[in-house]
Image (cartoon, rainbow, N blue to C red; front, top):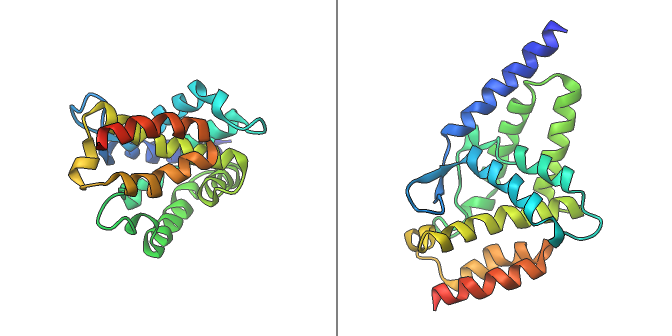
Length: 194
């Protein structure tokens, strides 16, 4: 029992470091950059509030669990903005390998049963093949769009993003899991770029 609790609290202490990882995206009021823990919490709330936009076979409970876990690897890797440089660093083999190593380390802090459960959810989110993971990825992409709209352009201005880049890098992923949601957001984003 003591070893199990030691491992659970070691993981929770390590997860606290996510609060110190700053993202490129600002808060909706533009006052400061959000941290990755705030982003994960906000995404869990997005899942609750936007559950009616998920496919009928999506388990919002599983989506929320994925969203709480999905960015823990940023403790080691940091935030890699989707619009930075030419947009390829986000999905590069080097970034993915670093995230895999971080997942091994961070989830490895847990007792084996929890490590396997949490890692399986993280892997499922990354693969984005199940209905739950596809919807979770959609929310992960829409939240920064909404923050950029609320803050007057945010990272779109910083990285000189075009509407076509937003549509291909972000919109396609949102539309895959929540097409009606992207239709609504797309109109508002297009108006900002026009």
